[in-house]
Length: 276
Image 1 (cartoon, rainbow, N blue to C red):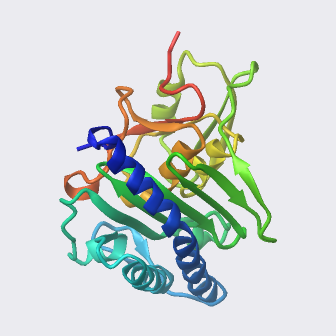
Image 2: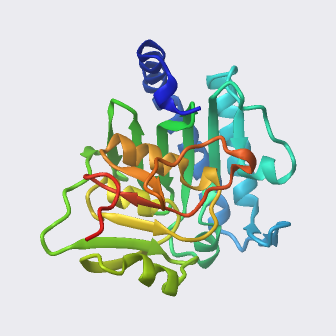
């Protein structure tokens, strides 16, 4: 199911609930960030998961804090969290309303200590992300959005400004791409025929947030991702006027079997790509 199948009254009720939940979700993200930064300042140990991806104590402590906070905030909603799923704990999401949590997106960036890692919390309704909070603990920046309510970015001093996608400048697209998971040949092929002004690399869900705040226009992801990697950034981007699309130009949905995404691209204002 997708959000389009919801009745207007149901969609409005879910969006109102999302707006009411937002302060508590931001608090949960900030609590997770405190755990992450505590570990970040130490000589932490990096372990490998079954899929060979890295995990640290920061991932685990942050996830425990977020899950506890969300269960207290909304006891009726299942929480799909990265480390729990890796351990085989997969909740039933057939109701169509559930949380997606990546407690530390960009673990490779965390390990390399470049600051480009995030806490991601999203609320999904009938396949569409309706609330998203992305917090970059080392940068002190938070992005948040609720469907129909808009998005904002908050700096380390607590100053908030609206986040809004821009129209593509006349000089061409600013493309943002993965810092640690790039495929240069696939990216070149995808961009062929497009007017590209510059290419900027970034880690984690920051790429989606850069489009949401009008600093970039396009993010192609031509590699493996999981739903919790991008749902929060997708929610912020959608609230700011952008979207995430499959390579066929269809909206990307959540709650898929196995929670794995197809290749996709994210855009700002203007919707799916229109190639010359």
